[in-house]
Image 1 (cartoon, rainbow over the protein chains, first blue to last red):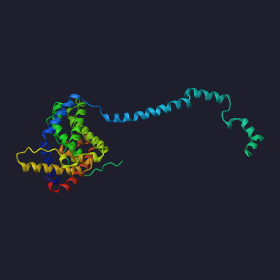
Image 2 (image 1 turned 60 degrees about the horizontal axis):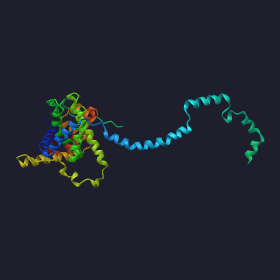
Image 3 (image 1 turned 90 degrees about the vertical axis):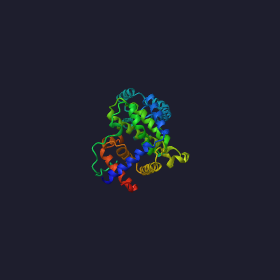
Length: 117
Length: 192
C-alpha cells in the first residue's frame, strides 16, 4: 500500500467514525428537515437571485419614469421622422452649407461688419 | 482565465462505487436518508457551524426533490453538486455578516458535532481527535481542493461524478486532489 492509499484509508476511517459519532440531535434534525423537504417539494432554482432583482426594481422604475417622458418629448416616432426628413430634403436645403443664400450673405458687408464686432 | 494545470497523479481507480449508490436506493427518500449524515459532515466542514450546515443540507434536499424523476444513477452527482453550491452560497452570505456579531463558539472546536457513544472512551477520544485534525487540515485548504478531496476520497465518488459535482473537468479534479493530498500529508505526516 503506497503513501496515498494509506493516507486515504486513514482519512476514510476518521470520516466513518465521525459519521458514527453524529449526535442524536443532529440525526433528529436531519430526519425532520428531510421530511419537510419531501413534503414541501422543490424550491425554485435560485430564489435569492430574485431577491436581488426586487432590490433593483425601484431603480429601474425610477429610470423609466424619467426616461420615458424625455424620450417622447425629444424623439418623434421613427417612421414619421424618416418621412419628414425625406420631404424636407426634397423641398429645401436643410443645412447652411447647402444654402446658396448663406454664401451670398458671407460675401456681403453684413457678415464683415458682424465679424469685426 | 487560467486553467488548472494537469499534474500527473498516481493511477486513479476507474470507478469507485459511491456508498449510497452502491445498493441503488429505489426511492428518493431512501437516498436522502442514506446521504444526509454524510451531507451534514460535508456542509459542516465548509461552514463550521451546526445550524448553517443543517440549513444547507435541507436546502439541497428540497432542491433534490425537483430531480426525483432523473435516473437514479445521476442522483449522487446531482445531490453533491447542489449541496456544494448551497455551501458556497452560505459561505458568501456569511461573508456579509459582521464578524463581531458571530458568537465565539461558532469558530471554536465545538462547531464539530460529536457524541461519544462508543463503550471504549479512549477509542472515542482518538476518533474525535483524528476527525478534528482532519477537519482542521481541510479547513486550511483552498475550497476547490477541499471539495475534491472530500468528494473523491471521503465520499468515494468516481472522477467523473466528482467532476460533475464540482462543475469542472476530470483533469481539474485530479489536479485539485493531488494538491490537496500533498498539503494534507504535509500537515498530517503521521498518517502516511
